[in-house]
Length: 199
Image (tube, rainbow, N blue to C red; front, top):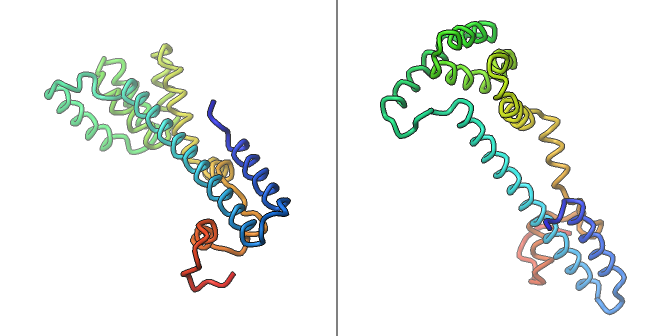
């Protein structure tokens, strides 16, 4: 079972307390143990964050391919036609209302490549009206369309970015508060300091 960010922070806090309460450790050894626990926590949290980001990006790519990727990627003529549709969609869809009118027209005409190209434009610009127009005529695609929309919106919102930062953040223990990450690594290694920073 994968540890959560809270699990990692709890483990680090327990390690800090063990070091602080270990009377057999010298002041330097206590600080070194705390630095090691802090670095282990920050490394583990960063790995969780990058793993989630990789999985999220992979999921978004897979959904995008289902919804508006090239329908026959091995067919060169289809790929060329799709690129042409993308160019035309980007040129004509000057705003959301125009894009909605264009995608409705393309769906009525059965122009699948143009529909896909306009969906690409809709997601790129975060035009909900374009996606809604598509889903109204293709209700079986609603779950995919909604999930892809949610993934794109969460990655683009400042609040989500800040939330993500704090989710994977480990506060420095008081013993390391004034130190840079580089200095903390020196303390954790137990090697003599080579930096000019004063602690």
